Image (tube, rainbow, N blue to C red; front, side, top):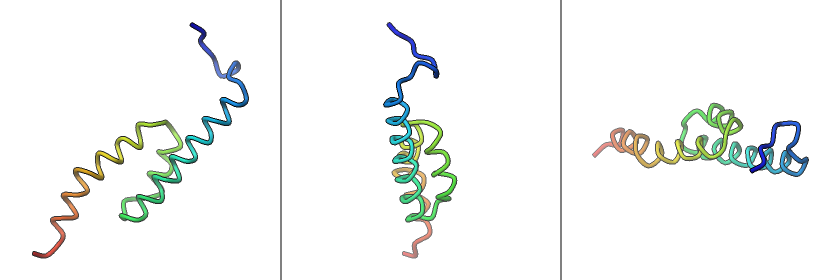
Length: 75
């Protein structure tokens, strides 16, 4: 098995990684802005790693944030 260091990653690999991270960051920023949950933080976190920020955002969206939005609604 070959192990690549930063100096051995091909140019197309670096470009692919950059596209993936920028896409994830943009999507997280837009979705967080729509629901009002610190969009700049999610945008920056989305640039750091893939796919953990997307998974954490999705889990929070389906659990904790959903419950907090239900509590704020008048019955």
